Length: 470
Image (cartoon, rainbow, N blue to C red; front, side, top):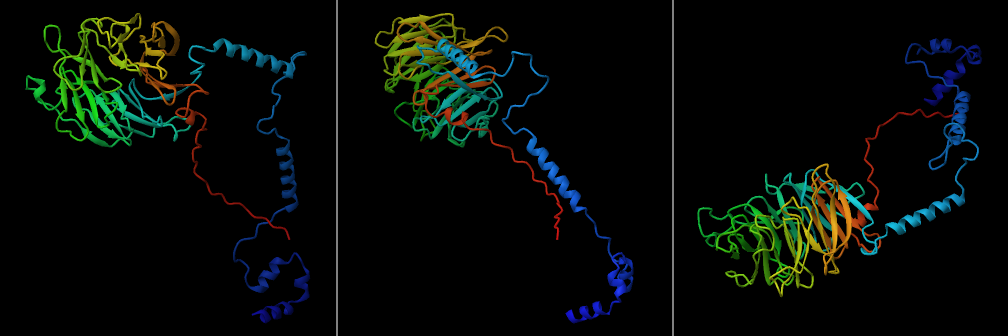
């Protein structure tokens, strides 16, 4: 084939070869005129010149982070800030920091981060390690938040509705952190694992039996619940059926023990909140008639401690909590009060704080990890003030510090002892995490420092021309 090509080339007359503009004549002699399209021609010199000009223009544009003067020039005397001005600004900032410093709170909770949910936050729960937060709301949903896996966008990694159309009232991790107790507006509490899968559902009792001690479970709406502080398989619930029941995780067919609060006349009263003592030996319940009744865990018939006029009759006691040393009981009443009680002398309160508005039957109160402060939230009507987080001295119940959380009621508050962070749930669907940049550990500090993940955009394929110059 090579020899054939050379022979044909040599047989061309010299007039066709020397004539550079005779493409048409050559095509006709070769016999392939009319086949294919005419090749594109490019002015390479013009293309290279345009490329050079574009590169010069791009290099002259300001880069990201550089200062660019925009608009008309400034009047004389209004030049750019100098180093002296920067020093003055830093001094003023230092003075502001000194004024805003709170010596009582050990300079805690200066920064805060926000986590949004859809409806009013009605329940909060943190696992013992502080790695995960679970929130419940009035929209019947539970959301799981992983601090280590979140970025600054603060998105929940799972949302579910374990109790169908019943609002979530209480959420609490077990001592080991492997399961979660879910108390909703129905009569059957549930236990979920860390990923939201059901482990246990309490049985429903027979509502036609008069003596509630003879039923296997609750027959009316639940009001609260918590885990035993020492026994990891046992938890506690209270209900509108007038009973407080203990359950074993390995036996879902029947309750373990039942406690029945009674009024002064011996009638049934409704417990609105319940809790264990720190050692797990006592069970306390706050009732709608204003009483606080405490039983020995092994003696379910008669109360060991009883206060008939702890709070106003007809008000819902929203929270009971024991101090870390186990000697003081704090009660948050629906009568806008916060009271502390000495277990060794339970006839009258040690101290009383009044004027703490409370619109919700689950408003919390809790002790600080060092057992020196007592904190609770206040309620506020829409467009009529702000809900506050109020800190009290445990010994005197004098107000130490106040934080305006939001223009809505503060419903839930939880002070985690390991993280040294405060989780707050409000009535407008906002969950806040207060932390100290120095004294707090892990938790919210793991995610607020991460930048938002970039969204993945669809890649478009483009066809470029490759120009070579011989």
